[in-house]
Amino acid sequence: MRGEQDSDLRGELPGISQEPELAVGLLASPGPASELTESLVPEIADRLAVQLPGVRWKVEFVSDRLVEPPTDLSALISAGARCFLTVAGISWCA
Image 1: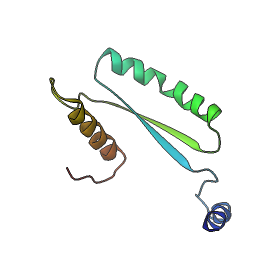
Image 2: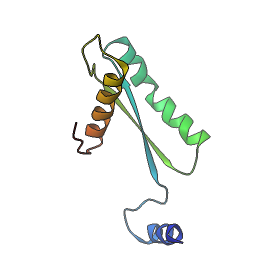
Image 3: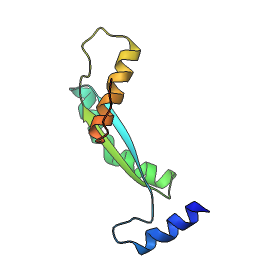
């Protein structure tokens, strides 16, 4: 019931989109991997919109080394999560 009310209000309020927005973060180390990944952002956004309609897709790209090698996978994943939460403007405590 609540979802129906929310969707009704979206059409009445200025600046509120009819479609929800989903963000996808792409992260690559600086250098060739970063250049390739960044060049694919428009294509990925277009494919998401075609394959999964009904939402606005926002594809964000970040080039960052994150950690100094060697490191374990869990440290790399944690650093990636902190990076994207920071980009999204979400305060995150380690």
